[in-house]
Image 1 (cartoon, one colour):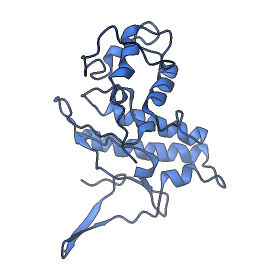
Image 2 (cartoon, one colour; image 1 turned 120 degrees about the vertical axis):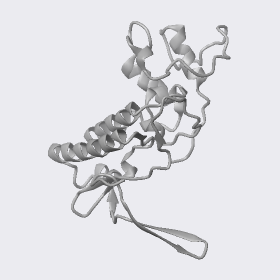
Image 3 (cartoon, rainbow, N blue to C red; image 1 turned 30 degrees about the vertical axis):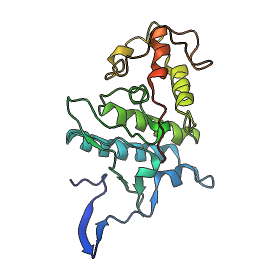
Image 4 (cartoon, rainbow, N blue to C red; image 1 turned 60 degrees about the horizontal axis):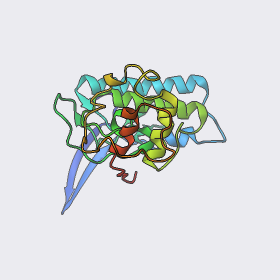
Amino acid sequence: MSLLDVVYMESTGQHHAELWLVMDYMPSNLRAIIYDHNRRPTVGAIKFYVQEIAAGLGYLHRKGIHHGDLKPENVLVGQNNDIKIADFGLSEEVTNNPSSRRVFCSLNYRAPEILFRTNRRTVAADVWSLGVIVTEFLAGNVPWNSDQPLVVMEKILNYTGCEGEVFPGAEALPGVFEGDDSMSEGDPPPPGVVRFEPRRAVQLPLRYDLYTCKD
């Protein structure tokens, strides 16, 4: 796989039991640029970075690959401000089969269908992550900064609304209503998490397994 916007492995080597990977030298990453308070990126620079990331994602998606962990730390920046998408540890081939993956890092960049514990993930989840990065660029922080899954879910629902009249078309999200159906209709919603929404939507946070791995 080779593209200017995707990190390239130049060579490999082995020393005793150690495997060495020789990759592009990229001295920084996008997070360092976003949070450089001494030199905020201009709108033109933001457009450039977003265009480059989108080009890299487009290449991966055309190859049938879902990156799965797009965040500023995984977008490397070179000495000439060129960017490369890196860290494919959570990447998957895009297929029609349900995913068996149970570990999802980078909570603040997860798409709703992943937060809602679906077993179908598409390249649309990468596009959601890119949208969060754009917001982070412009606002100087992620729109829902938390290390608690339920808090992130509540904030997303406050932005988008829930399935029903306030969120028409939610059923089009990939597999959003698939998953654990063991919960009974009598189970109460978590206090203060979702208010004044259809019961079907309130059930969604309760399906989440509350597992959060470390970035």
